[in-house]
Image 1 (cartoon, rainbow, N blue to C red):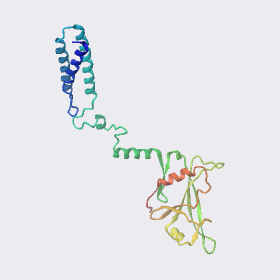
Image 2: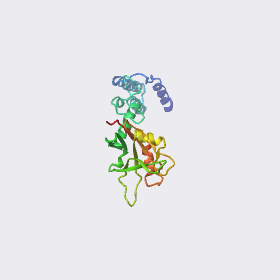
Image 3: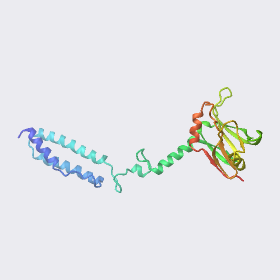
Image 4: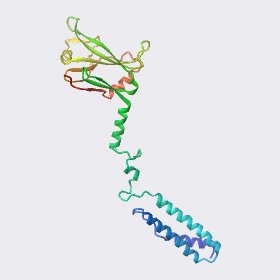
Length: 247
């Protein structure tokens, strides 16, 4: 029999071995048994061959096959309770693909806590979330004036708080976040057009209200297109104003 025919016969015998069932549990003992069977097979096959050189080639080939099978078994994920779940995920070490909804919520929450700072005003009962880059912000208080519709005189006034970017400079101002503050009665009168604020034909835009005050953005507050006005729009889109009742 020619050499290639002998090796073909050996290949057929190796392929006749039972294929591992990866749907079942593989313990260390099972792996050792597979290894021992492969070695016994190699030994028994070698005894049938008279030529030492052929036996050497067979032993080398079988060692490679045994090594490949063992590598596949040892590297295949084994879990007695849930084959699809790795041990690291059981311990809470989630990969990006394995992040659960709860974990994602925690990540987003931590991210928000890390990347934002909070301005709190206890006098009027509100908080305002700012980007972390605003850490050295300033609060500048000015006032708004309400002009009567009939007599053209100032009949109402109130505070307007400017949250000012830390990079603001007099020679190069950045866009402020202006918050107008009205009492509930003042806001109701404004809604009845008993007075107006400034020359704009539209009134302030409400941000929210608590039990005593209404908070609003001035009309056309960003029409000067100062540096940073786009960032202010982004901040306001995230509903940064949170309200509390005051005594």
